[in-house]
Length: 489
Ligand SMILES: *[C@@H]1O[C@H](CO)[C@@H](O)[C@H](O)[C@H]1NC(C)=O
Ligand SMILES: *[C@@H]1O[C@H](CO)[C@@H](O)[C@H](O)[C@H]1NC(C)=O
Ligand SMILES: *[C@@H]1O[C@H](CO)[C@@H](O)[C@H](O)[C@H]1NC(C)=O
Ligand SMILES: *[C@@H]1O[C@H](CO)[C@@H](O)[C@H](O)[C@H]1NC(C)=O
Ligand SMILES: *[C@@H]1O[C@H](CO)[C@@H](O)[C@H](O)[C@H]1NC(C)=O
Image (spheres, rainbow, N blue to C red):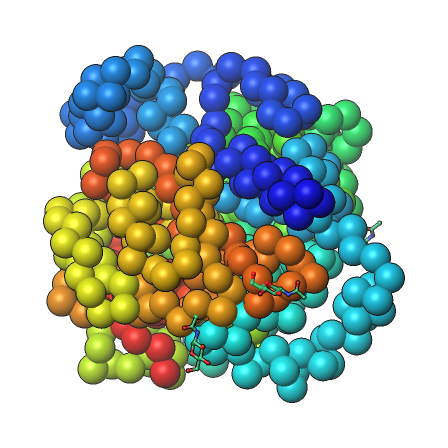
C-alpha cells in the first residue's frame, strides 16, 4: 500500500511537471501558479505567421483528429517551451509531494550518509542490469551541484551537474565589478536572464539565496526600460531588459543586452535552486527579449569566428565531472572525430531540431518514420509522442505504462535504446533510461523511465533532453543552421 501510494504520488507529480504550462492560473497538486502579467505581443516580427503556422499545423490537425479543442497559439508556444527541471529535495510547491518519497527512515538514513564513498566501489560499476545508481540516489535526495573540472579547450566553461543529471550549469561573470553568476545552459530557449536586485518570488518574499544584478552591485548596469517574460515547462520569469558587461569563458562582451528578473516563480526563486539564471542558446529568433544570444553576440563582436555552441554533458554516475560548453568551435578531445555527423536544423522558429531516421530497442528498428527531435539540454528527460513512447516501452521486457503518460521499467533492465541521426546511431546508456527508483529503498525494483510521453508539437516530434544528450557530443551552429553529433570518447 505504502509503495503504491508513494508511486502514484510520484507519477502524479511527474505528470504535473510534464503537463506543460497554461497561460491561465492553474492549480497543480495544491500549488496555485500565479499567472505572470502578460507582456503585450511585441515580437510579431520574430514570429511571423508563416513560422507559427508551420509549428502549429501538426498539433492542430492532431487535435481535430482526436476530437480535442484546437490549442491556442499561446498553448502551442508553451508546449514548445516545455522543459523539465526535476526538483531537488525541499523545493516547494508540487515538489513537496515528490519529496515525500525521500523521507526515508532509520538504516537508510545512515546508509545515505556513507553512500558517497561506498557508491564509488559499488555504484560506479553500474552498467546494464546493475540497478539504479547509489550515486544518483544520493544526489536525488540532496540536490545541489557537482562541480565540473576545469575545461580542456579554449573559450570553454565547465558544466556543473545539477543533482542527478537534472540540469547543467556554467559560471559567467556579469557587472562591474564582475560577480560570478551560475547559469543553467539551455539549448532549448534563447533568453539570458539573472535575478535582479529587486526580485520577488510569486510565492512571496525575495528570490532566495542567489546572486543578483542591478544598479547597486554594478556600475555599468543600465535598465533599458522595457520588459520581458519567459514561460518554461516549469517556471516563469518576468523582468526588465538591461545592458551590462558580461564575460563568458574569458570573452568580454561589453554592453550586452539581456534580462534581469523582477518576478520569478519558485522554480527559480527557491533557496534550493542551485543557479542564478538561465543562458538560452537556441537561436535568437526564439528570444522573448528580441536580442542576440551570447554566442551570437560573441560572433558578431568577432570574439569567436562562428556562433557555434558545443556541449559535453556529463553523467554524475561516471564521476568524471568532465562536462563542458565550448563557444566558437568544438573540443576535439571530447569526441571521436570519425563519428562526427552534421545535419540541417529543420526547425524554423529557433529550436535545434533534426530528422531522426530510426528509433531502435535492443537492435530492433521500431519502424517509426519521419520523426524529428528537438535537442534540448534544458530538458531532463526524453518526451516522445504517446504512440512512440508506448512503442519503445512495449519493446522493453518488464516495462509498464501507468496509463497516464508515465512508464516504469525494471531498474535491472539491459535494454538498449538508440536514436539515429544522419545515418549515425547513438545508443543511450541503460543507466540513463532509469530516471528514478519507484521505491528508493529497492534499487533493483522498478524505476521510472527516462522516456516519457507527451505531445510537445507535431505527432512526429520528440523533445530529446539530457537522457539522450549524455550519450553524444552535441554542437550547434547558428551561421550554418546545422547541428552536429558525435560519439563521446
Ligand atoms: C542483464 O545482464 C546481466 C549480466 O549479463 C544479467 O545478470 C541480468 O540478469 C540481465 N538482466 C535482465 C533483466 O535481463
Ligand atoms: C546560500 O548559498 C551559499 C553559497 O552557495 C551556501 O554556502 C549557503 O549554505 C546557502 N544558504 C542557504 C540558507 O541556503
Ligand atoms: C536603481 O534601480 C532602482 C530599481 O529599478 C531604481 O528605483 C533606482 O532609481 C535606480 N537608481 C539609480 C541611481 O539609477
Ligand atoms: C549599449 O547598448 C544599448 C542598446 O543596444 C545602446 O542603446 C547603447 O548606446 C550602448 N551603450 C554603449 C556605451 O555602447
Ligand atoms: C526489489 O524489487 C524486486 C523486483 O520487484 C523484488 O524482486 C525484490 O524482492 C525487491 N527487494 C526488496 C528488498 O524489496
